[in-house]
Image 1 (tube, one colour):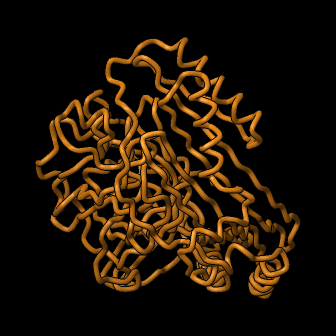
Image 2 (cartoon, helix red, strand yellow):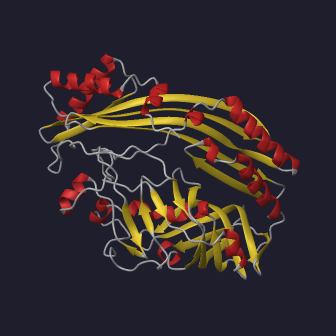
Image 3 (tube, rainbow, N blue to C red):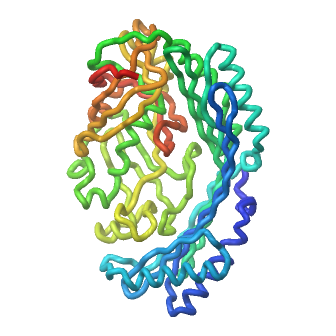
Amino acid sequence: MLADRDHCADYSIHGFHELFGVIQAAAKSLGVPDVEAIFGAHSSALTRFANNAIHQNVAEQGRWVSVRVLIDGRTARATTNRFDPDALRSVVEQSIALTKSAAPDPDLLPLVEPSPIPEIPRFDIKTAKTTPKERGKTVAEAIQLVEAAGQTAAGIYSTGQSVEGIFNSAGVAALHCETTAQFSITVMAEDSSGWAKASAVSRESIDPLELALSASKKARLSRAPREVPPGQYTVILEPAAVLDLVGQMFGDFSATALADQRSFLNDRLGTKLFGDNIHMYDDAAHPFQTGVPFDGEGLPRRRLTLVDAGVPREVAYSRESARRAGVEPTGHGLPVPNEMGELPVNIVIAGGSDSVDDMIASTSHGILVTRLWYIREVDPFAKIMTGMTRDGTFLIEDGRLSCGVRNFRFNQGLIDLLNNVEALSPSVRASGEEAFDMVAPAMKVRDFHFTEVTRF
């Protein structure tokens, strides 16, 4: 792993400091001293496969800069993907014009002053330099494994690198580079399917053949699925399913959401809400996490104890929401201006010591769930969610997987779910249906409510 930010030169960024100097000079020449710029750039490549064959190799690069100025209690943004001097001056002019036409904001704060921001090493040169041939070789080996079992594979293998920086005329200058690798595979048999997915900073942290083997095994074990009646079951949710379901609640851990009365935590902070074994954090420095160590305002991200022994303790604060509450901001603010305020984005759910196999062995009658999809909110305050299982749903009888079952639709309150957790596996970096990843364990949960058997 490499922490050296110079490796971001692969992006042809040509020095964000120099670019901001051009932006700041343009703003000053137009009589505007207060200016902020958020830069971003990425390059990514993807190998896609279906029907046991690679059918697509694509690569893309992109870059952008978002400029914000402050004028007489007003602010607004303008964005461009061109970095030449004329384009940078033009985007400054656009930002000034938009700001002058905006209504004054009595809550608008001055630009952030510089704070020490830790560097987190999340750049792996081997991942950044991955070639299509290397991805293709790995995918071909995974397909061969699946094909040998008489099954059909589809999925993606992607690698890439990104950089994000924020600079302002008050002296903030923060930059973060990282790489990502992701492998996802769905294996299809005649009447069943299996799925596996993983992502990491380094491609060497992912084992695509192990993932292919896991998905193939699930497709094989779930063939000829039985239809079992809906109802309340003891359920083992694998980490991807925990992410997809429990991950729906974290937008509510926001001071702005609380102030707007749109959080299920309204009137519940500091009260016992979940089981004693539920501990949740927001921790940008966690070794399984990814992302920048600063927020959209240029403040360092602070570790938050979201839930401690079942008690919701802390929420994220932007500078504006922190000023209203008379507390310190936590470094989770979104780029200003925005309506959401802040958001915890580096979720860690603490795990336990039980493996999934241990959970299965201790279950006399239940359901194993690989992952979920089509998840929607039914009741925002009770945090009741609905959705469906897919790609590996199994009946557990007498401590073993007895067969695959037809998929279910569920209607489940997250508060009840987190009061009914009987066992937790060690936490891993989980990837699921949602676009984001988080650190999560598998969970054994009693009285999970399946409402009907689906047609899929």
